Length: 227
Image 1: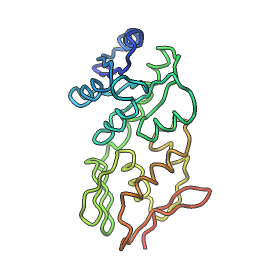
Image 2: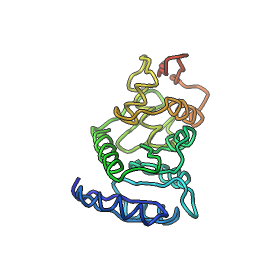
Image 3: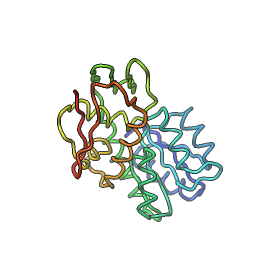
């Protein structure tokens, strides 16, 4: 993990100091942001390897920061929050976070989760991956999706799910499998985040004259079907 740079976004100085010390022990560097505006600025200009993002940030909430980052970046994000309710966790993950840690937490736990997420994301989509059908092209390397020649605005998570379905045309993929492949095998989350991502993806797709579709298989999962 040498030369790994972590962006810590939290309004509490103690969080930066305690986590920062453990990161240094692990050979990682870090930079700090104490409000949402600064977090967005540093995420775009410095391009860290991973972002620790507090949910309740001053100026701009962490959820909005995460949503904005995910418009054009797949940088790993771990959400930090004082809340532990399931609904808050689901909201964070639906917006594109890779993991979620509820306060209070131990710095050692945070660093362990950082290493796990970095290891997981570094092994995803390293090969040249592109799948094509009539009026559809999904390119994981460039993070681009074209439908009928038009470039769609799709988030990195949506692209991964779309590619996964399209490259397994005709096969039913259950929610648990999609969750483990896209969020990581060692992530134990709520499968409803998969439903939400696919629902948002479908809204961005044309509804007429397509030779393919994403079908819901009741009680199981989803299937990419070519007509």
